[in-house]
Image 1 (cartoon, rainbow, N blue to C red):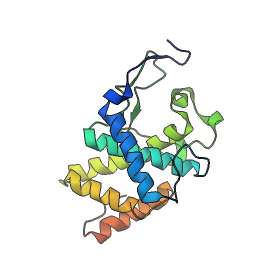
Image 2 (image 1 turned 90 degrees about the horizontal axis):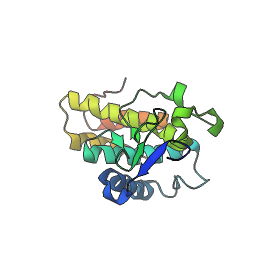
Image 3 (image 1 turned 45 degrees about the vertical axis):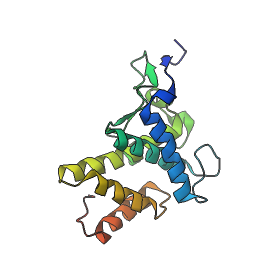
Image 4 (image 1 turned 120 degrees about the horizontal axis):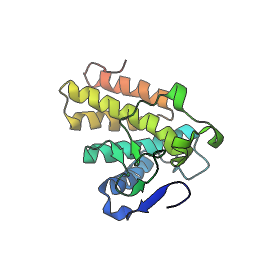
Length: 178
């Protein structure tokens, strides 16, 4: 066991959600380039980097119909750490967004600032998906709304929300965003 409680790293190449996640980075880069540079770059804002990771987590979760990303590849032996990133969460921008690595509580230190912040965005996308599914919408239509919104290239959580609302209005559906 390592110092942060991680006891096992299985090969990521055996995890479909990790493969989908990484492939989704390619899709996001093709939509956003050159506006949003890959998360590893110092050119994008913290929020843009979180959105990049959040998109990738969302697409992996929707492909596998499983809200937990990375649970196969990253298992822990400590109660402080969750198995991967769970999109089915109650994180909120106004209370859970971190601007500095020193602000992150212990439970999120294993994720790092970008991944901890990405769970706010991916969680909102997952909530949107759940609301539309409960209203009888088809997953393909839900994903189309999110993809069409991505194509508008929003660079913040709030502009994505506004653009998603307009996307839903434009495509003749009643907005389900409160």
